[in-house]
Length: 231
Image (cartoon, rainbow, N blue to C red; front, side, top):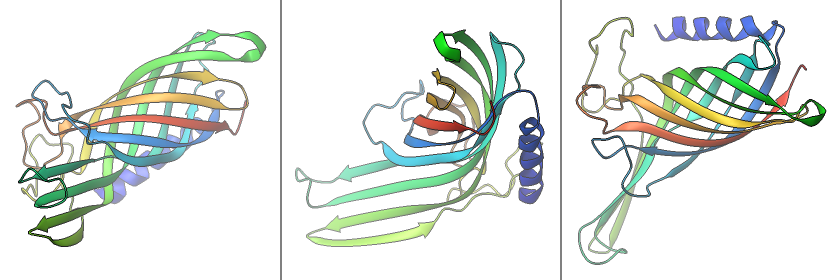
């Protein structure tokens, strides 16, 4: 299933590379977090710094409206800190959870032309993502003794065409993530500047019910720069 998804995503990405639109390579900074409240918000700053990189493109439908998609390697996750006394230097557990996904977004963009072929754009749309690797690092301090451990993130082998979660377990992460992206930026002809907010709708834990509440879902704010390969 994993290899099949990679083939489908690759073919879909290459299909728009030869359209009448614009193709570009992009990279940027991710400020990742995980929702902690039932309404889907994050109550404390536990941001994890990560990155994204990939290829994207537009179809060139019109000057006012266009469709954008792409294929990106993107880092998600969060940091957590728990203190068991009044001190912040002793008796604590700090964890860093940093999974990486191949993400396929689809945007509907509204373009607002500016001078010299430049434009401001804004858009939104769904995304699907597949977890491929990641690390979890835990630092524990108890009575002045510090220990650290690092382990690979384990993804469940789920069939995304079914409603149930195959191979689900409390110690495994849901392999397939989905949600909505919202972005805006400036297309300055030779460079594209963009900010994006990813609102995950799938719970991270593989045995979690997505509809129970909005806790434990990915939230990612990103800033990226893209260089067009075609104009």
